[in-house]
Length: 284
Image 1 (cartoon, rainbow, N blue to C red):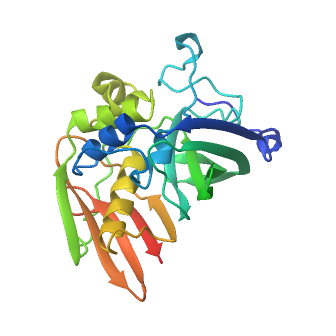
Image 2: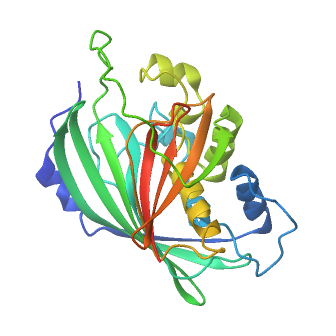
């Protein structure tokens, strides 16, 4: 059982900030292109990186002694010490102002924007919103709001009959791939993400009670952003908002989908049954 949440205490983290910087390298761009099923090519200095390359840059590094059983760093520090065991990337919003390019030194400034507590079907949920700004020598490249959700370690009731899902949405544009464990491992490595739900099948099934390895939320968002840009001749959305609606698991086909709608683009990833797992809206 988790400790009682002291929201007043956690909200004292609002306004805390941190900075980190990193260099966009040729080999990072090659690795991310390969992971996103793009042509790897022979990138050179000045070439544009994939649009969500910033998620691979300047990730926090902690010694093994400071990691929790789930592979995340122990609670506290920059992020508030939320006493709920499950932590996942829930969604957010991105504003693209400039491309990151090979050779750029990118600086990320992060600030805790909000901490809220809600009650959901799986119990107590705590949301932490973090604002990021990524800059290069040319100015601001990306503004972002990242939403992190913490929740209780509850298992899905086996006795509860599952409701029949609605018919899968139709898509004007669709690309399909397989959520191979190697794909998940590669993205964990690129983002220095030690969260065991993405690569440790024994942990994710026996401890957290999921049916298999879980596809990263930001990897789904990266696929969506790249499809949106491709459908607009390489131009990224000015703004892109997204949220996870259900987990996407390893070992089956998944799709990236898009529909043009009222001057915007509705996008989503879907599992093998065609049911959305992450939804997003892009505007130019």
